[in-house]
Figure (cartoon, helix red, strand yellow):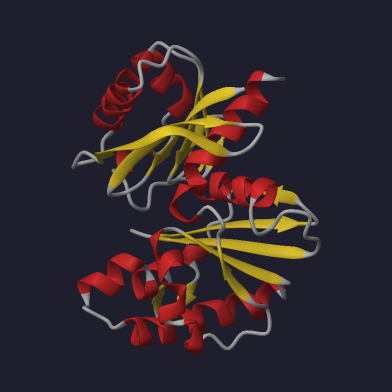
Length: 247
């Protein structure tokens, strides 16, 4: 089936129609900058503009940068704090006039990679890491998602990990890929100590640059780029929306 998948991030809100049987994007992806401040009303109306761009009339799957419990946001690390305890699914449905199914954005990316990408048919413990404005994680054990992990908020070098080695930090501090890679390796080493994963999958924009810092990665578990690179969040959101419509 076709589904509109939307990836809501700290800097951009991206969407595209997705063939949920193949994981392929249908047509061109569209991106609208995330409004600042990223309040519930502002983001909801930006989502409505995205839906109208595609002239979409069906249900929408949305990856959102917060832990989501029964449609309700429980934290807000890279968006406005007024999101906390907001019923995101209800708000989006009310503004767009369409059914909206919402999950954590990194979990969405993970679903796509486990279904169509690098994690397909892989067993054991797999951790997908999305690196962008912040750091998101999705943990899978033998293909089953442990939802709403926020391992980008581990304390590393005396600070929250995503404040030490996100892509936003790399840009802000003008770090070379090599210097940033050394920082990211420390983060992976902490995850490896805690979870003993069999595989790390890197998503987000940094995945396309993996060759620039892979020589700095020294973990036992291999680090590989997500097959869908920066599109995994869109694809996974569409998959989630389709699964909820099928319930």
